[in-house]
Amino acid sequence: MELLKNLKRRRSERLKRLYERHKRIHELLREHGGDILKSENFMSTRGHLQHGTMTVHNHCMDVARYSLLLNKKLGIGCNKHDLIRGALLHDYFLYDWHDKDYLSQRKRLHGFHHPMTALRNAEKEYQLNDIQREIIKKHMWPLSVVPPTCREAWVVTAADKYCSLMETVGVHRGHGAKAS
Image (cartoon, rainbow, N blue to C red; front, side, top):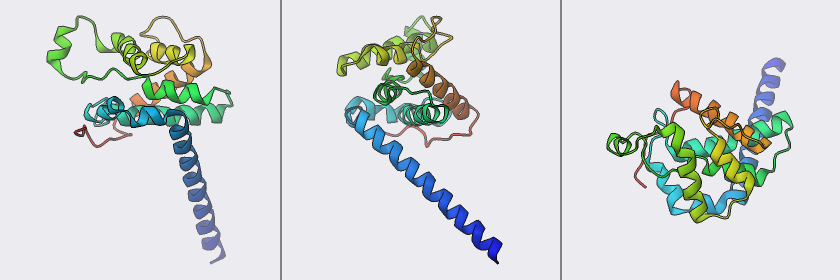
């Protein structure tokens, strides 16, 4: 009986810690990216699929969360403001890359050109600093050829690769594209 009580207590404590961590992450996202999260264009990314059944919106949210977790777990010391804003805007390309008609008009592959499209779109709406630009521009390394030069861009790149893999193999599942 005592063993069962200890297991329940430990499970309850673990769930409470996970809830608190989740709550802190969402507070950070609202604090540093609230304007992005509320923007019409960012909300429109709910209507485009990224990988599998995951929307671009949910993918960017996951990349921001995992970037924060990776930064903390490894003690990298990234600037959270830049990390969050860069992660939220890294795929701010604002089109459905699965649309064959749109892609046939583009001579280059989506994976190679979307970082610059995302950067142009983000710069139209937000004041970006050099670190945020670097995150958006280099998150597709090694496709971007030139590697990231700041730790924030490396963290977002790693989080993006992890989330993309989990979405592609079906471990992280979304709910499909939703009307915006």
